[in-house]
Image (cartoon, rainbow, N blue to C red; front, side, top):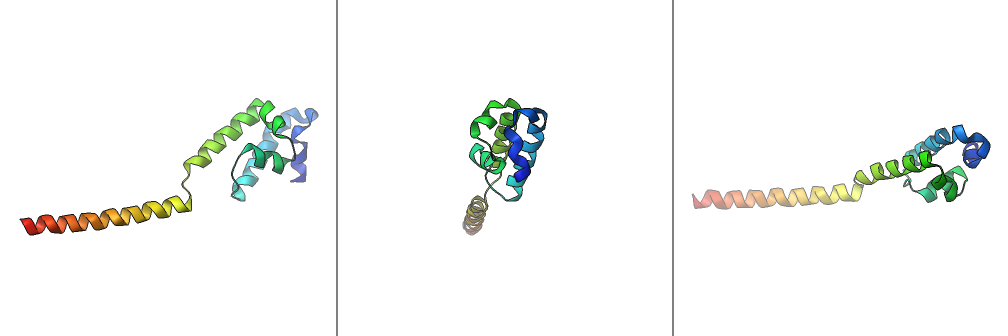
Length: 101
């Protein structure tokens, strides 16, 4: 992560998007939430630096949106339980219909 500390350097303006990309990759691998606070901490820069660079800001916002679309294990488990309940309900209703025929 030390190599990412230069993200905020004004001299490395062309390297900022690449370093930002590496930081987001690191956050993805460690399964940390991609938010400006985590990005700033991992890169060793201030949040203001991330917000002021429009390319980096747009990338973080896009990745944050993508990450929000991925269901969490708790959501998946809840949906699986709901599906099981629905299947059981369908079986019961089907049996009731069959008996009434």
